[in-house]
Amino acid sequence: MLHRVFVCIILAGAFGCQSPDASRYQLAGYPAEVQPTVEATRTAHQLEDRNGGVFDNEAILRNLHRIAVSLQRRTAPQRENWKVQILNTDKVNGFGLPNGSIYLTRGLYQMIQYDDDLIAAVIAHEMAHLEAGDCYKEPPKTKDEALRREICADLRAADFLRAAGYNPQSLVELLSIIEQHQPAGWAQIRQNAISQTLSMAP
Image 1: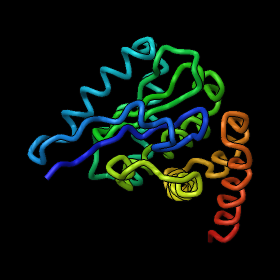
Image 2 (image 1 turned 90 degrees about the horizontal axis):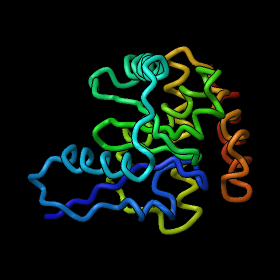
Image 3 (image 1 turned 45 degrees about the horizontal axis):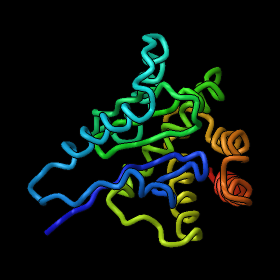
């Protein structure tokens, strides 16, 4: 039996996992006995090579790690392998891999760098995709399916943020910041779904 693993992507065009462009990073099938983390590690090297390598700033990486750990402790305490890094490119993008590696591009980070809640929103959204196993699913066949998957990740991420003490409303703000990079109308639909869910939260 063959399995297939995909990169979870926060694309500039969709801010999410497995958008239509995600096929560029699709991996070939591999035998069941091969660990997904092996493929994820290989893909991590490919992503770094394609995107200018890793932006090495100890203070920034320490802050990203702190935020990731605070989310992990409250949402997935059994999983301790989260690693967040910055790719040295001006593109506005982000990536998540099944081995717990999450990447923000420098272009995306520069848009949110002064707000830990916004950084946490990006990380939580990717964690939500990975914890839901979206990176093992086939890419969405339609935009509606892709949008539904993004909303599910948004709502899960909102729970993660709330549990870890971050402002879940930061997801709404984040979607406003990257609105121009998404398909028309997506930001508003997703913001409405998040706001409606938050209004019903105890």
